[in-house]
Length: 165
Image 1: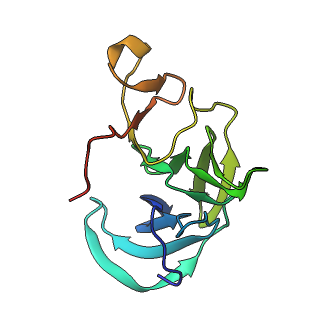
Image 2: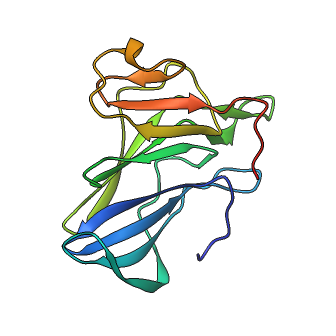
């Protein structure tokens, strides 16, 4: 990557016919970043990887910097949702602030852009896990999950006693 980062969000999105992009967004070391980087991946008609690019390219900047946001790619790989995280801006007592925002990266015909959704997480959070859950009709169908039936997505908080190995 062009910029080193940690606590970033990532996913794979369709770019143009038979080209997908590995997307690495936001992250940071102590402060959130709004930068995005793409790595081209050539795929065949069955979505098998044929070739991986050798250069990272800059993508469209996010509306604001984040660190520790969760991400999930839609089933059709046309959008990546990025939810929660710590904001780049600091509040009046100089502590980073969690957000409940959900951002959406969309790519169509080689053009990509970010939008901020009208729907937000029920609670602000960071260092969470996001998954796309198909066919959710009610929140009761998935226990221990803050689900949004409109987006058909769930955002899990990481339990305090878990460790990265």
